[in-house]
Length: 413
View 1 (tube, one colour):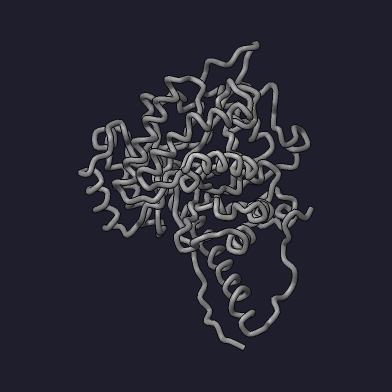
View 2: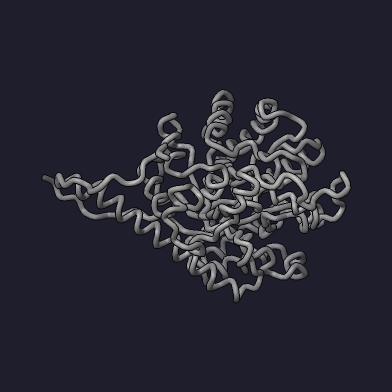
């Protein structure tokens, strides 16, 4: 018998800065771009997080998607109308040191495979600016979408990925960065009928994309920033996804997490199924796409007709929903990550992403206790999982003591 000390390993907990898109008033931040980062770091210190995921986006004056048409909130907290410079980086580093908050990675969520060549070039050029800013800030990675070329089939998109996205990954490799892909299928990103508008929406495609990357020597650059809300949207559960990655030899792919849930409405599923609302949404009128951007946002009913995003901790504890994959079982999520993935736990961020519509206030003071509660929930769940993993994975086995029960099992319906 050996006695092993109890040493749980915790994940750092952070927040995506799109939680408040205009924390710094637009008039102030447009004139003084890095003020927005300083203000967010101060707010993050109030939230008592370990890190932030710093949101970048095309400035509203040049974005091809009107703000009124967006359901997924984005924010240009990192303003890159002008390239990031060493002087700007020094200013931000000073704020990082003053607040004690770190930058987990930089996030730019856009369609890197856009079918319009000019728009694709604009987005790629902007992503390269994000890469350069990440290097100057000492961030290890960027986080974003792959996207989809709407003019091509899914198989044709793999060919497009190989020709257009691999060069981006070579640029990431040259800078020593990871590109962490987020797996939302983005069903309402366009007013068309496609549900899968981001081809990297599921593990089978992560592996297909990674194999392409391996052929070109950039396999180490492509990683996944896993978000369990999208697994719920696709009818999947976290444990089975992680087990499948392990069984397939790709347990190393996940290197970050969005802590965002999804609550499926059984009534909505009864009406529309998991494909969502397909007609009479309001994004089309008289056989044409609505001219009003706010009306175009109704395309998101492909998703919102049967589910709603959860800010962690705001949904009721519902064991039956967990078993039906209609809500995220956060404790099992954290246990499965430790049991099945190849993680450096202490360096794997848990980033709270706030998209729960009812709580999407942009009042900093009103949002503060809401985010604090959600962040505390995420942190305590992770600590509970870490404690269970350390006790059951090391302490008890060292003394020859059996772990009780069976637990949740992958692939079991």
